[in-house]
Figure (cartoon, each protein chain N blue to C red):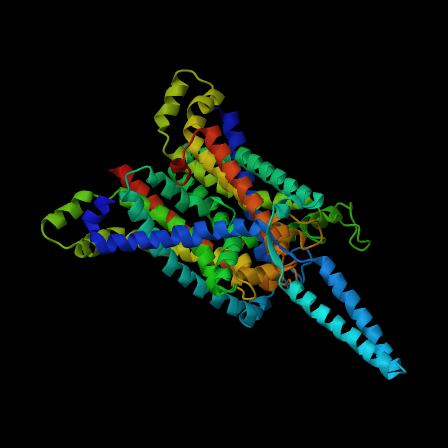
Length: 345
Length: 265
């Protein structure tokens, strides 16, 4: 801190401090904290009050009929009095109804239905599978680009990785929508082979299964695994590999003892990013299923906010996802013995 | 490496790159199909009709305008934040450094939808309804982290003696910042601004939660998948692909050139 002031002076240092504080508190910490707080209470709307009000209204209607039917003057005043008390009671009850009480409770979490909990588990399980598959597919690619290809070909392959990586996420998902659609590429191929018939509508409804969401997710997020691994492998001195080979080590042993230990931080980052993106992906299930298949957890969160307008439950679901992702980060850091500094490079 | 394993690796790489590019080819090809539903298999003749249709699609053009506004807003918010964070982190020498670092990079590591949700809840309670402003704030929270990492990497390569020398020679703190630090950071400022703008335009998962009833180019594309899917979307895909290929080629050429130069030395 002192060196900051010594170099840039008090006013500038204070400005840096202020801006950083605004960011850390106003855009990161407070929003998360408010979200968590919001997940911890419910607005207690007394449903019995609502029922009671409805009952009172129907008896009020009856009394009004009575009033119209009343023959004697005495009967009229009696009914009118009853109406007045009813109206007064309705008024107090309605005041109570429109001012719901804020009650702190864990019920937003514990009330998660078994269906929603199953969806949560499905989302996490699929995200783990996407991560594992991406790691297996990408490790050889990253190694080939970093250490096997001659410079010009490596540059070309780099280009081949950057282009699909930089193309909009939605368009990458859209490609698979077109491939797996009812009359999409795959079904047309099947039709050519005579396996399905468009006239008879016997096409295979890929888009209505979770499997197609999985396929599109792998395609959409796989490159988030390549680049972190490539970045760490690029710093590995090729002479180490040569030395291993000269000393007679077989290829698998070179990878086990030299390459993978060096790539550890990259593997950890790749896994973190891929898992986080798949577990929190709203775009892939939204585009692929188009409401024709079961929801994913991110869609449940969206519905709580924008369809049920139940922000407290939405906040609880969000925090569930947040906690899961933080858990995964901690797990990866332990597993690969890397620090937070190695992670974000 | 033996010939057999070399062959296996080459086949593997070819399959992998085909896997990456064929789906994009499908998207691009359907943009030129006269069939009114995006398809490459029901081919009804070559057309550029959908390009004209895009030019007249006012909702998409408004979305693009919103995206540009948000992108500029994100540059204006996230660069000063990222720069301040980087200055603080590169000068803070205590265990608070790691704490601050963890907080400031955390938005990169948590799902984007959560940034959208938390921004919506917090800034909504302060009276900012969901819209362009909340979209800027939600996106800036994580784009600033990327900017900070870029600045931090650059600051680590800075020669601190330059600043010290200027101070010894009697320059004021402001003058040191203006004449030495900022010029040193200028390339990174440019890179960070471009990256921030691109990331902002691309973003879907965070924006869709924070944007409310407004829309950007990308959220509009997202809603078209449900209602009104037409080859106009594929035309946007073609435009995105062309821009990306041009930008990526430029980037790789520059990088290749630099690598060559550093090897030659």
